[in-house]
Image 1 (tube, helix red, strand yellow):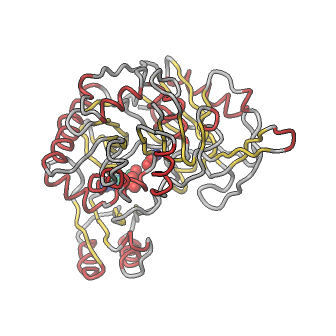
Image 2 (cartoon, rainbow, N blue to C red):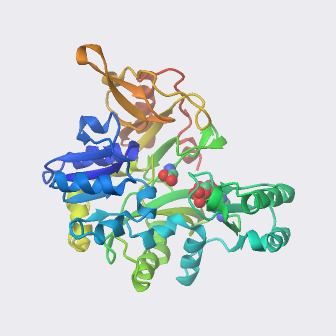
Amino acid sequence: MNILILGSGGREHAFAWKLAQSKKLNKLFIAPGNAGTAGVGTNVNISATDFNAIKKLVLENTISMVIVGPEDPLVKGIYDFFLSDVRLKNIPVIGPSKDGAQLEGSKDFSKRFMFRHNIPTASYETFTRDTLTEGLKFLETLTPPYVLKADGLAAGKGVVIPTTLDEAKKELTEMLANAKFGNASAKVVIEEFLKGIELSVFVLTDGTTYKILPSAKDYKRIGEGDTGLNTGGMGAISPVPFADEAFIKKVEEQVIIPTINGLKQEGIIYKGFIFIGLMNMNGDPKVIEYNVRMGDPETEVVIPRIKSDLLDLFEGVANENLNEKKIELDSRFATTVMLVAGGYPEEYKKGDVITGLELVKNSIAFHAGTSQLSTKNHQPTTVTNGGRVIAVTSYGNTMDEALKKSFANAERIKFKDKYYRKDIGNDLKEL
Ligand code: AMP
Ligand code: GLY
């Protein structure tokens, strides 16, 4: 099979790395990809949201399946685009339909969906510019901290958690009246603050049956001890030690089954990944959010723990016989440490040369923000091309053993102003 992966981050490199190991794979294309994906497939310089260019690429290269990495193409309806085109409609897209992608594309939609299907989540109210006054009054009935969420996609910045009523009122006004996040904050969800430990559970579904993938914990803040600005993710660990069998069983019964059944009942086509962001509240799960794709950097620890052929599982999704497939997992821990450019998540530089990749031992360097420059002597040089640059993934029989390898290799890879968190996993050791 010829396969196309859309996207350009560490998640997509991890998908490409895994699919390249499949006996069923013929040619692998990645659009637009990065320097890492160039090592396992062919990069094509097309944006993941340029549907017409993707169509041309798919037809010219007899591509028979498309794996969608990021949420953008899904929310913009790539699934429906394929389905409504005579020449593309039989080519499966791994990812939900445009309606299904609303689980991530609209916080208000996803809250209403959860309430319709009795899925445990924080209580909430939604406000618009016209109901700003009611929103401000509603804030007065709550206790701090306040959780304000822009309804639409806001590049991961749409959630604000002010600790005082004044700040919360100011923020709500900024979002609704002053369009702080543009159209994404035309609606704002205000919800109950959930106290507990966060984790993510990943599911692959064919619309009826499903496989639960390994759980993972992500480290979102830039600073050690979970301080400073939010980032796309600074590291991840899988499995999550506190997500034992009993907890995952609750997640399955209270969240996964009602979600998949709910989508089906509502006639929403969903064949792809569901990323469930959860709060573990004294052993009970509550959903913080859905994402309609895999997480990044969670993919860099989840995918390496899947021993089965990923392409075979994707075929199960496409052919709606996922229940006939076996999923075998690696029982070892996987950890990843993200190397980022100095300044990230604020302003940072691109184009700095990366060295030491060939010195990496006992880890996998998944490229995130990198690109390849062809220079003199035709020797390709890898340079930084994003805030998050490389995710260093390792296995270990214990979390510590895996982390030790990730940190050792994080030192070997060098670029100007490299930064990484040295406390990944520390919170899990204290539990
Ligand atoms: P989201 O963009 O929905 O993932 O939210 C970003 C982060 O905000 C989450 O990962 C949580 O850490 C935090 N968060 C979101 N909703 C809540 C909530 N209701 N209570 C506590 N923390 C929350
Ligand atoms: N690491 C969080 C995300 O992918 O949304």
